Length: 104
Image (cartoon, rainbow, N blue to C red; front, side, top):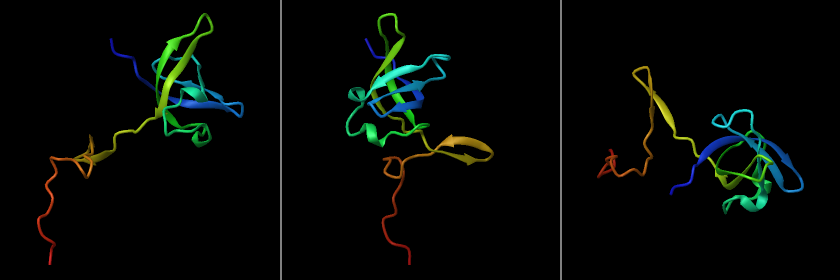
């Protein structure tokens, strides 16, 4: 069984090591997370309000949801071609041809 991974935005951080995430998928719900749920190498001191993260939510008793396996969300890079947004390929992608000699 696969885990449900969601994306969200950090809405609040507390110096005691916890914070809250909001997600468009789980509207009107603040998802609690603790620093111990961050995926390495991410550290609590690296986080800032407004950062986008990826996480796995789970219901916690009757207190709402908690987030586990929290990590920064890497948005796919997009570019505009012929008036349409398309996902840009990584420069190290195998389907991108590399020049074999230096231009003169």
